[in-house]
Image: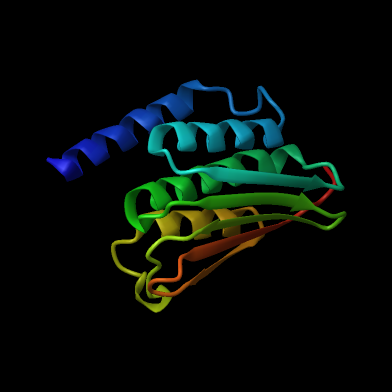
Length: 153
């Protein structure tokens, strides 16, 4: 029943994502809203920090927001965290998103089969020309680092 509820929740979220215009607000505001929604839904504080020294191309809006949403979903479902932090920064060449949690962590080398959330995030990063790094250790939480190139449109 728990798995069925989670699947139904994912389906509803996917349908909502299709209906919601993702570029209606600036990316930093959309991320701030996502973090607030996460905190309201889970009671896990999500501290956000933004250091935007360069404009974020429209082409990075969708993959960045979707990866952040999936990362927060994974924290909610698996991490057993009591704190999260989300930093978004840019320089003239790169957008960087770092997401930390103080949860249970996991063995990164054993995330191939059945970990579709991580696979999807890596694929989104790759398709956007970037990369996603996952750092985690059992009992020491998890850190995701998304790096996407900023290319003038």
